[in-house]
Length: 102
Image (cartoon, rainbow, N blue to C red; front, side, top):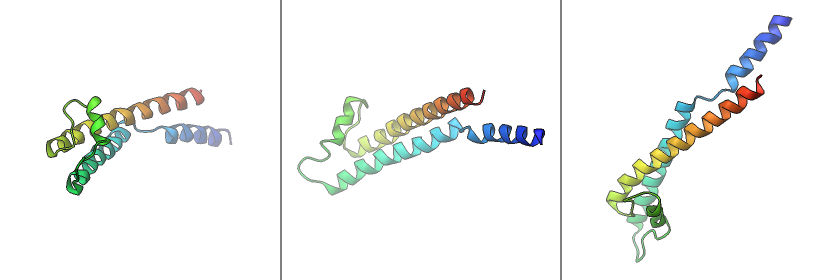
């Protein structure tokens, strides 16, 4: 019985870990495609002031604007930001799990 509880403990440590790289890719895809789609949506919708709120991202993302070229830059910036954020969340989570597992 002692080895059974020991293997359950080891299994719970392994299962609790998050793959930081995979989380970074998923968050990067969501961030990049999300910003790309939002920009394209606003361009297709049109109007007098197209995307005035989304345009505020140009304060953080150099060169971004609610234009066709800006949608591609948004894809890049969204993917980069999402990837870094996803990796950071995975890294912090794994550190906390590692501390708890001791």
